[in-house]
Each structure stands twice: as structure tokens, then as C-alpha cells.
Length: 460
Ligand SMILES: [Zn+2]
Image (cartoon, rainbow, N blue to C red):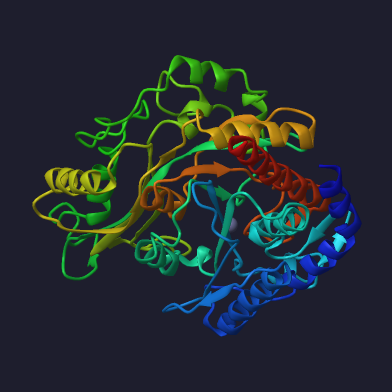
């Protein structure tokens, strides 16, 4: 073990300077003019993997490329698949950046650049860990596969297709993902649950054109009023979603887990104070952690209708629309719920109003069994590296591609992140703590070392 850590310490400087080179590539996947940069980032990564002795392939897709590499196969031994993404969010608004987004700059022990934590820095921790492990242990008694995408910030369509077609090639026992956060500085976490999501856009039409609200008001159904009335019937004042069958498959939170949530060092008062609300709101009978991590919800994300400019305008609009999402918990079925949402909204839509509902995208939630051997190994590796055991948490957000990959590949998932909650993901001045970077590399190497050790033990 000493030799692996020694190797990592000796090469720490090089890891940083290579990481900074990676950050200089503006691989923004959502902006077509940056397509070449996404390709460049793929090539950079493939080159890095070549240097650690692998033979990576850059997989062409309909959009942005994927990078795949693997260590030699070992019969009857575990396979871990490491996922990450090398594309980044657009850096706008540029004027809010203290240093330019694609000129990595170190301040107070953190490197500031777009993609620093999401996800270039976190992705590289596993590449460098693998580099050290491949130097120290040969032959490696288990297999590591790497699958990195360039389209995560833009829907992950290509990787989704690839995983389905190359299911056998990607077969693995455990999927490792570091595209997430630690519990707090110096306190690692294993995230074992993600919520699912369903996104819709509802459009209501009344008259065939905007009308004068004095001349027509009172005699014509106003679609903006209808929209408010209908949405008001989707969730009640106790935070319960009213769609029939919505809670049918929701798994109750076991008492053991409720206790575990309650024991987390989490200050609810401070949490609400920080976002400027006096008091939380949500489904009655659940704590705010339970509401965010383990209960499904409904939220309106945008409302559009009528006149929104300065002053007043007496218009009776022809159209009104809303964008809304449901967050789901594992076992809830997005397709089935989508049908129920459509039926329910039709049933509460006034006959004078024409309704169109677009189901934009959806994905189920994820819940990893804490009994998995990989959770046990990761727990020990994190504890050894950080000097304290990891917290076991769920996450209220969704990473649809991870849910999909774990289902298609039938693999355990380890969500272990090295980011911090003030890393400014998707915002100006994104950063990644260099201490987190190096500790992440060490924790990942420790994890791989332990898998190897157990594997050797089995053969004796
Ligand atoms: Zn990410």
C-alpha cells in the first residue's frame, strides 16, 4: 500500500498540471461550435489512457464521442466499470468569472475553471488511481473498464444507445461514479439512492386569438385561469400529489433508515435560513431530508401566459402553458405515471379548453443495496483515506443515465463523489479543491487495491 501512496505523492505535481491542461479544452457539449473541442477532450483522455498502458477507443456516435478502455479480462473475477463525463456546461455569464473559465487558476487551494469538479477533475481521480494500481499490481486480478461520455450535459442520448447495444462488452459487477459531492469538507459520503424524474409541458388554448378582457371577459373561459385551476388540483396544501395511483409503488422508508437520516449532522434551521425561507413546506409526516431524498414530489418549473411586460394590459389570453416535473422514488414507474397524469389532467380540464400535454423525458429512481460487497470495500477505503467513516446518504436529484446503466448492466452502483457543495457546478467560478482531487485519487486507488487483495485471497 505504501508504494501506491508513494507513487501518488511523487506524481502529484504532474497529475495537477495534466488536469489543468484538460481543463483548458472548452468541451461545451450543448453549443454546436464547440463540437471540435468535445472531440479534442476525448482525444486528450484517450491519450492519457494510452499512457497508462491501455488501448482506448474513441467511439463515434451520432453526436459527441465516447471513450472506452479496459484492462485485460480476468476469468471469474469482478469487473468494475468507471463512468464519467468530459463535456462541460457553457461558462456563461462570463463577466461573473473572477478568472477566465478555460484558464485554470489556483486560489486558496482550489483550481477555478469550468468542468473542474463537474466532471473532469472527478473523472481523472480514477484514471490516476488506475495508473498507480497498474504500476504496482500485475497482473491485476480483476478487470477495470472505463466509459466516459461527452454528452452528459446534453441528455446522454449517445451513451444510452451504446450501453444497450454493447451490453455484453460493458458487463460489470459494479459501476463507479464520481459525479457527485461529499457530505461536507473532509467527510466522505456513499450515495445509495437517487430520485427519478418526469418532465412535462402543458399547453391550454381557449379562444383562437387574444381577446379584450372587457369585451369578452366573463363569457369566454380564460386558459390562464383554467391552468391555475388545473395545477391547483395536482398537489394539495399538505404536499400530497393528487394523481390517482401516484403513491401505489412508493416504498415506505424503513425505520432504520429514518433513524439514520435523523442522526446525520444536519441543521434544518440553517438549511432553510441559507435559502431565505422561514419554514419548510412539504408532505406532512416527513422530515425535510426524507421529503427531498425519499419521497416523490411535484414542482412547477415555469408558467407562461398573457401580458408580462411593464404596467397592465387588459388581455384575455388565447394560450397558457406550464412546465412541470415530478421527482420519483425507486419502484415508481414513469411510463405508467405519465399515462395517469394525462388522464387526470384531461379529467380536470374544462370542456371549453383544448389541452395538449407533452411528456418530455423521464427516468426511474435508483436505490443501491447497502449489503453489496463493493459498498463494504468502499466504506473501508474511504475511512482509511479520510480518517472518518463515510456518511450514507441519498440524493434528491436524478442522474438518469446511471439509473439506466445499472438496470441494463444489472450492476451495483457506487456513487462516491469528491465535490463540495460550494463548488459552483453549472455556475460562474466553478472550482475543485486540490486536496479533494488528491484524496479522491488515493481513495480510488485504495478501493482498487482492496478489490485486488480480496481477489488474491480467494484464489489461495
Ligand atoms: Zn456532471
